[in-house]
Length: 131
Image (cartoon, rainbow, N blue to C red; front, side, top):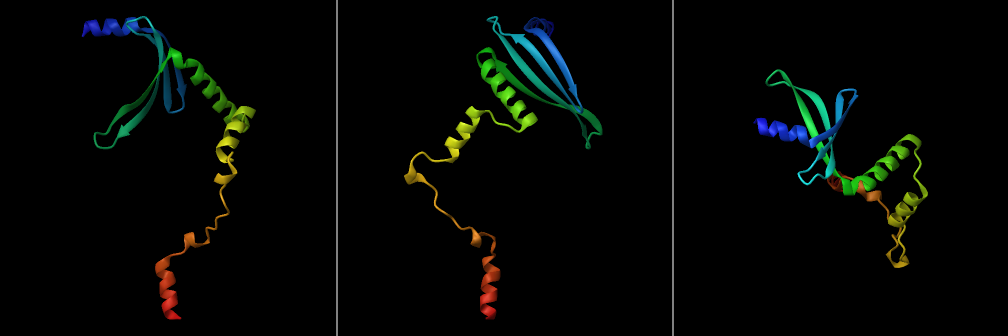
């Protein structure tokens, strides 16, 4: 057990804790045996178990490796900007437009009527029988 504790201490290089309401986030920089750094993000929430009448911590972990840092940071920055401002950057608007608007006119969606979706066919049949 002591050897495991030493390995865990050696692996963790830097840590930052963020307390946010009922949640706590742990940002831990660790190192693989090959000396490659990576990030673990842990979300921890205190929960109460009604059966045992005790508190426990529910944890979720995310591992982020160095080769993915830029993509992750760019996406996180973009999402945070959107949440704060409600604005999508021009390149994202183009991607959304491409996904929604077909480039090939043959694939265009025709006008579709949804009038019959909310009707209950059983009730409709009963009403027809009454007539």
